[in-house]
Image (cartoon, rainbow, N blue to C red; front, side, top):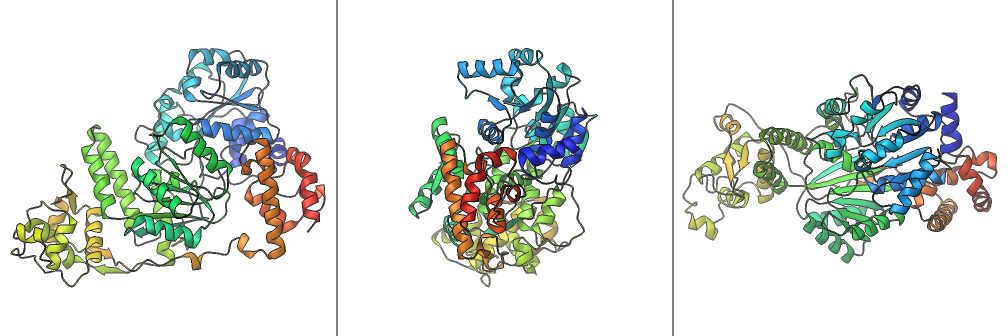
Length: 599
């Protein structure tokens, strides 16, 4: 491990291993198979990159996305590691050149798409060279129940069959107990050691607000807490992505779109703009994001409800990879609950798949409606327990919701559904409950039902919250015809009979949490330090443009913060800064010292 630590310091520029990194690296270097569950930003890549440098031969990394491979290879080449990609983005001549250099032993690491790896040509090719290890990144893609399923991943057990003496390391940031079991079974890792790090990302603040006007709420959130920051906004549909992008751009924000309906060239250009430029907001469907390792994403926002906690965790985990403060913000309403339930019910998937999807959605709804710490609820879902009672960095902890006994009001709502024939959605039912004599109420003679006007003491907003929460609780379901009409469930009957009490969250005016945020590093800088910070950022942007790589490949923001804080004046002092290894010291040391000595 002294050799591993030396590589960590001299090549990657980090002073010490974190968490279980050292144990994983020792296990793989000694030839062991393993499954590694580590949160986004937890340093998974080092767990296979360092063993690949320590063992004889080339490390073969199976990765699902072209963008991920290219960015990781660019970062490795920047620090002097011989790495390359082999995927569909290369021309036949470029691919042939990579293969020739591979046969000549010219690479430490080769990133390959699963489709390419599984071809007979490639498998025969690597039988002719020493292979240090196989790393299967984003291993949750093997799960047929998961949000990122890739059919090719289920065939990767061939690696163990063809190369039984080559260690394999499967890595993911997102896997509940069921998914872990599936990864082990499908990849033939029954004898592998399992390393599970904490799923907690303490630098991310989780906030879920009641959806009123989601675009305006999003705009207010960005203006208040993230002006000029890079962020990701997730929407469920392509149409909503395009509309939101246009709207944000119209408000003066730098926003670009990404969804599967765009041409590959459009997606590539927008992704490169997001990765290489600062302060760009990516508005996207879930087609975007896996493997995006941009470290300075300061917020991830959801305008629609994710299908599962795994999806939510994976998507929000793209914020704050550098360890600095970041936000996970979501606007959530009744329509989201109805839409997601309907999508499951109308799916042509097998009944077992629908059951799994329903269970995952219910867990997601429970997270949205929880009256206790959101972080602890999410960690519990992944099987992680903790001694603390509250995280202190989610909206529930910072602004605890009030709970009220809503049993009578819920009975009124359920009775109204029944009295109106179980044929109407929330809007009409609220009109009946509040005694609003609309044309539709008169047309259906619902001013004559016993529930007309019995809920006039509550506002429309409160009633919408009641319906949202009782749908989330499974006391109501929607029709299959797509009209949004509510139907009673078996669970609702015990409430109507008075055999079960119902306690709900009390709707209060959303409070901004910005004033409760911890002061970040940038806010604490004085005018001289801020000037140095801007000089370093300008220099970094220029170098990145010259090299054709994103700015963070040169140095992360965390490294620039440390340069400002320590203001090193010599090469020896620069060596002590996290993120500056031997190669970067040789390439950029003189430039940095010149800038720093001016301060």
